Length: 301
Image (tube, rainbow, N blue to C red; front, side, top):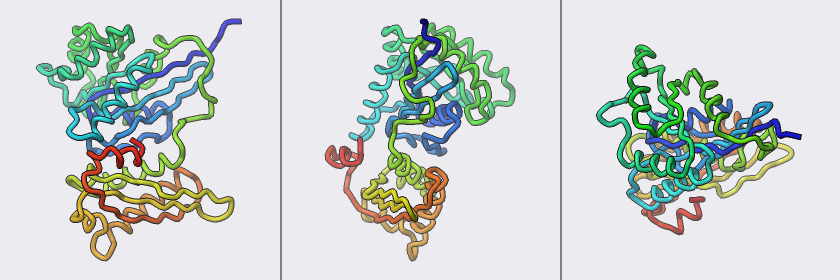
């Protein structure tokens, strides 16, 4: 009896802030990967699972490709490499609203794409953010430029935010994954534990609530995560920062800034978990944690 279902792993790569997480969320139909206007929002590899009647796609949403400046970013780039190695097919996503012919693809990323092609893996190019263009016809020369590189199997313009042309992406992926049983139960959306998503939700609100360097030098560490049969779940977190001077910025005058952050985070966590939550937080200074291997391992990097 022939297998009637297809399944495969797809890595989503690209520069920071091009819409990788938004694309995965749009396809899966759930917010698994946090999204903010700031680059480098995604730090860890987020695994999301899309299942239809006859196809299962395991998406590996990765941090934006960059030149590492400290150990945390080196680990982030290791996630990208690992995801590419595991993938059956790779999606390269770029921002069509910032397209420049003279620099179609940065050299560092072009080298990465060349290695993927050499490994005989198909690469789908996604021209994202059509909603920011005046006319969809603006993508025609972009598509021609991308095709001229002889790197991509498909070039597809979309708006991940508006969920336009998402079916075209799924159809393209279907061509490059094999007939086989599903890897996971069709009801699953991710293999990540709930405490991972809780920490990401809080980190998202830190990105949205604070400016300058604060979000980038901050980490959320879950100390306790108690699920209760009756009453609210109890979650105790540490907000990790690098400098003592940042503590006052996080907490704010009379604690108001931190109180607002926790309230917004709590509401979002309750929406995600569908249970009541008591959220408690402490702000801890860990100097240069982004360059400290011990701290990075303890925070799950």
